[in-house]
Length: 464
Figure 1: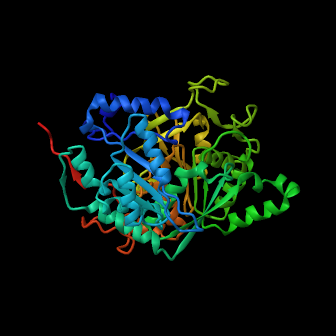
Figure 2 (figure 1 turned 45 degrees about the vertical axis):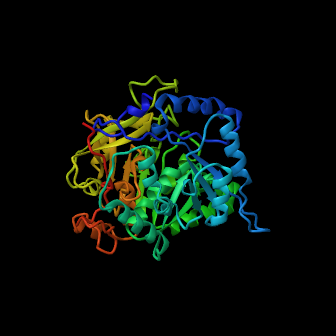
Figure 3 (figure 1 turned 120 degrees about the vertical axis):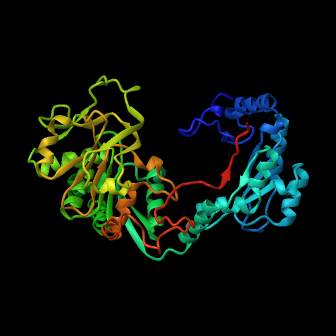
């Protein structure tokens, strides 16, 4: 109850609604204490302040094509036996629910037909909010929770619908090589992939992600698994842009450095995030400054050129609780920075961090003398946050994780820049004052051509 009152914004206003998700299956022993907590919670806050949404699968066997309601009936019965009654039953199914099936669930689960919501398979995940809106879920919440809302012209919904329509009819395609070491499971990079998708949608391009295991790019792979080695390099060479995301541990780092070296020499658009930025510093030190053993002390504690070091305030060797986490401010040190322009010519940005190592500030002048610029630093000027390489189409590295703040209608600027450069639109975009062409703009009837996240959908009047 305390958490529900914490403001989600900087405005300090107490939220109207708090969403609590309880995963798993009803009846699982792991979730029983939480279901009991929910049961007690509904009495503490009273019925008018508690709305229970039960999500259930409606299977449809291929052999008969019939939508089966028994799993839903059984799970609702089990839930009721534990002291919770669903207000809404959300049915996940492959095709829209038949009216008869909806009425059957309504009858045997003791809810009105309008309280049975169908979420069937759609062409993209962006269509799901529109599906919920069509079934009147917002109006139901307003009545059920007595929300004092005033509906305004739906700018946000108009832009969202246009975005979901756009995702279905994209023709042009751009490809990004994601060079990582957790590529066997794409969910490892879920937030990175979403950030790329948001940016690709904003410029009307279909995104193709080429997953490359960085270990396959290393010379050792040529001897051990030559087929994988050549396939990995073929993927890298055929991509329109290169992304090296974050990670931990020494495995695969030399392969990432190989990919960064190729992107730098071939003038391919490149974005390095967290470890990706640190390895870009290592690559430049080795191949341009001539420091052959340059490395991060994370991988080689004995290196004579420690270009990436552990943060001084942390205890080496003690891993627990030693990361630099959360939102931190980065100041731009250059007015000509490409990333500064992509951020709307901002003087500073607040982005989320998650790292234990950083670029060695004592060596930065060696890099800047050769055109490798540290254009973003922290408030004290001790931490290098953003790197850019002069005379390159787009060679950017950031110490923070911009994917954490990317949104469908407001893509993250570093990822947006990568997609613009990969599709050959970056220079034109910068020359136009960082404005998209009318063809690429989300029409929000506001006259602005840059994607924004202003949700002017629902206005909550003051209760005083």
